[in-house]
Length: 79
Image 1 (cartoon, rainbow, N blue to C red):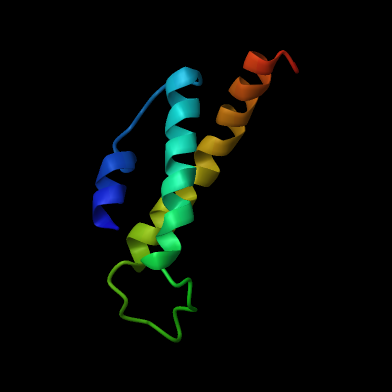
Image 2 (cartoon, rainbow, N blue to C red; image 1 turned 90 degrees about the vertical axis):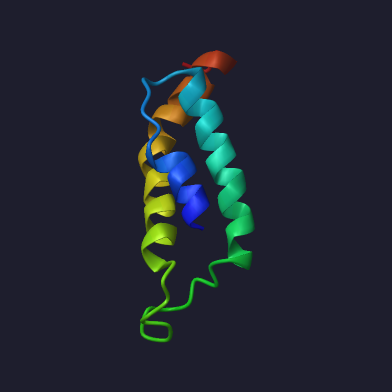
């Protein structure tokens, strides 16, 4: 989990190809994260050490989604 966070949290870019590809790569990594992150309520696992990293990865995906989707629409000629 922390290796994913290190891999993605430091990336900065303008909307474009790199953002779109990073977004797709992160979305794919998050699909596999259910093996690492059971998404249980914090009340059930209050001391789970990976909770902050899992939340940050989900937040990054949410932050990147609008620009990545806009770039995909431009590439597809939908804008």
